[in-house]
Length: 289
Image 1 (tube, rainbow, N blue to C red):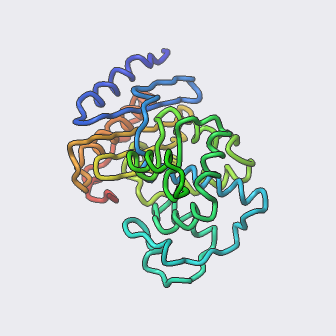
Image 2 (cartoon, rainbow, N blue to C red):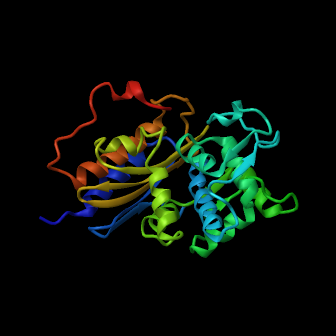
């Protein structure tokens, strides 16, 4: 019996409507060719999900020979950022391989690694790369040129980056299909995205034997997660974003995180109605938030 995506959309929309804030999503199921969204073209703060774009641009530089995967970059005082990650605890001037920076930026969401790579690549060059992919609203906003008033205004409003749910799905699909870089580069990006430490949103919507390639983000009034689920029903890409949230708690019970998990698990159940797997009792005790 054919699946009716309108039923799934009604379920996901209801979750978003209950959320105390603004919540949007975009879903693309590659085998069924289902495309669903709510506020799919609405701009949201990316928080750390923009790091996927930085990674993709870095691999373009590596493929062009302008950046060496095995090369190193030194940690400078201006690079060090607190929050997520471990490089903030390294010695200044210590050299770190580009390979390690990419892995730490994505898997641990390391903020210092992100600054080091973004500074080396250049904010404007990352954004030009995104434009070449056809992404009109996805932009890196950190480390913008001091005289760029437009980027400064956007940074003041959105933080380190901005995107729409539909465009983030397009970016991930470009990585999945090899349009974001060479086949080898896209293969490596998918492998890095599938090694998440912060895996308790889209990642835990599927059984642990299913590969999920994800990148989440969090700032005070926004939670987000984006990813590709390589499911038995076919790969599907999901991007869920929130903003203007009333709940600002930094706990797994944050309403944004709960709602994203509910959306992701609803998608899994819809496409795998006969699968008996359920998230085990007590899973919340191991959330990585």
